[in-house]
Length: 512
Ligand code: ADP
Image 1: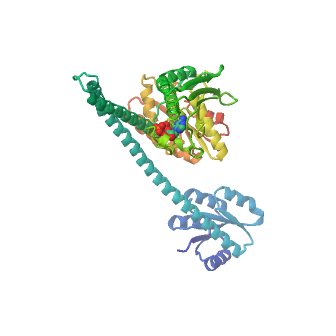
Image 2: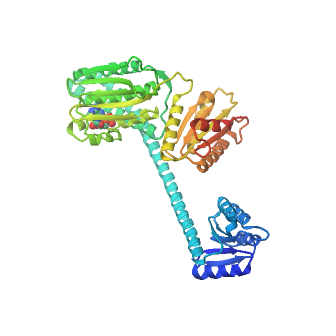
Image 3: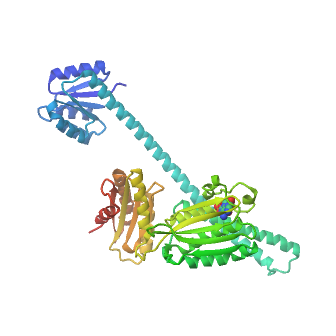
């Protein structure tokens, strides 16, 4: 199909000349209009790919025509024809949406080539846009399926846990002789059953943990903690296993190690997984030490290393051990009876607390797993917000991408049920975010939910619109005394160039 071009010029000779050149040399289907007003009328009634207009015309000039077309029919391309003395106006037209300009006297061959290029450029852009839309749709479907899978795994594991607990109780009752005396063979069989039930319970717990991490539902408390206490507690609880293999535990915690910020239970789970693995993969008579150091010069993070003198991990598999279900090749690794989920969970927990984790190892000599935790600076606010924003901002600067910060404020809400309100709000906001790196953080004390989102100015407006719509549906429509919820947003680099500005700009919109 031929591309349709509308030529707008108030001089009939030029119109005719262009008509001929564009139809014959360019192979376009050409229509003509003698004024800007007539051109506007025609584009309302017919479909055109491109409007080629003169700048100087009586009545509506070319600049206004371009502006009007960009606003009312942005899909139509516009190219301006201008004399040498009016290049400034041509540049102004480009700012207002024109795709190109041609200077008079016109070189007809050049004109045809330039118009073709403009149209081809637009067609490629539309194709890419179409692919992007298809990809986004496919992505959305995949995300939905992924959510369904996580939901299924989580429900199934929950449902399995309850009957399993009953079976475990029953087996234990019989084992302890509460249902009458049992002979040695029965005792052996039941002990075997008990061991396997415990194994199954552990696997189910791992699967549940992982599905929570993968769907971003890990709840992290923020407390100030003494690492020493947590480390000593875990070392003493794992001591019986270490003693059974004559493994020595040691710890080195520097004097000036500050308090850290995190969720005590989760940190204990991380330590249990790492030290537990070290015990598993270290032969009789080995050593395991836990070493704590400041990680960076600025004193923002603490690094905790679990070092063992065990069998080690080959270099090419060091990163893979953090993948779910991954177990290192080799009989010693495989015979440990694990599920390969422990390190995937550990990594998820460390990252949910804004830390990082990595492994170093030498086969036959031992392994060191190190993770970081944020230092508490006695700040009233949860430092995870600062850290998450730091990380995202740094990434945006490095990759030259955009970053939007949303602050969603609950104003003047005097109800006691702030927790429930925030839970509900978080749920609604989550629905509006599609990308994995998007972060939601609660600053409940200040009545704010913060969202850090990899979106540019336009994307941010779309997300804002979605969030406002969800809030309207969930909290305002049909409610007698709805809470006042406001959304503020700012985008780097378009609206703010620093983290502070980003925060200030978004916060300003929450006032009043
Ligand atoms: P599991 O221990 O249940 O198999 P993990 O995810 O905890 O699963 O660990 C994955 C694999 O990484 C282990 O199977 C083992 O091969 C390897 N690994 C983990 N920790 C150590 C360690 N301290 N020394 C040697 N290998 C290890």
